[in-house]
Image 1 (tube, rainbow, N blue to C red):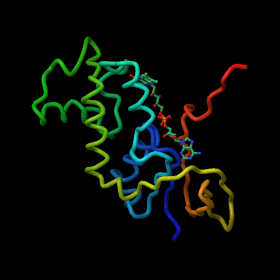
Image 2 (image 1 turned 180 degrees about the vertical axis):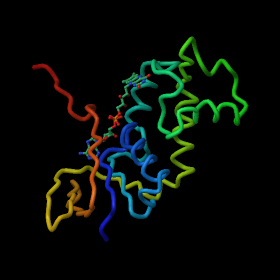
Image 3 (image 1 turned 90 degrees about the vertical axis):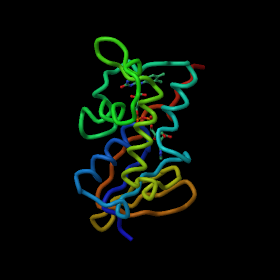
Length: 159
Ligand SMILES: Cc1cc2nc3c(=O)[nH]c(=O)nc-3n(C[C@H](O)[C@H](O)[C@H](O)COP(=O)(O)OP(=O)(O)OC[C@H]3O[C@@H](n4cnc5c(N)ncnc54)[C@H](O)[C@@H]3O)c2cc1C
């Protein structure tokens, strides 16, 4: 099967573009694959932000994974969350509500169906398609590819 879109990396950026494509009817979840080595979306983000004990994001309430800027605020209202979930002038969301909203969006759009656990180690252009290879020897083909690898897997450890 040739997928319409393959997103490499299921972090914040990859999940945002996947949600955008599905919400704007650019692709259906069966023609989309998000390839990431972890079991769940936003794994790196969740671990890093948990590890430092961060309570609120540094970015304002309109920055999140959904298309509508007010989606996170509306989610909080609809789920009867307290005003204290948002901090300061820029209404920075709590890490808890940001994560809850992200996972809820992912589930509502049925994006689990597009999740493909694996690590991409090659991309070739063949017959006007992108051929993606994974470390476990799989090959997936797509018309469009998004690279959303982040920088977290490219540590530069000083000598
Ligand atoms: C403690 C902390 C607090 C932060 N607070 C904020 C904030 O308040 N507001 C804000 O806007 N930003 C914040 N950031 C920055 C934010 O986390 C990053 O900008 C964001 O996570 C980047 O998302 P990403 O999808 O590019 O990368 P990542 O979240 O790193 O996701 C990339 C994914 O791609 C996968 N991947 C990599 N290579 C491959 C491959 N070859 N094949 C398949 N998958 C691959 C990785 O395993 C990973 O799962 C914060 C960062 C930290 C560490």
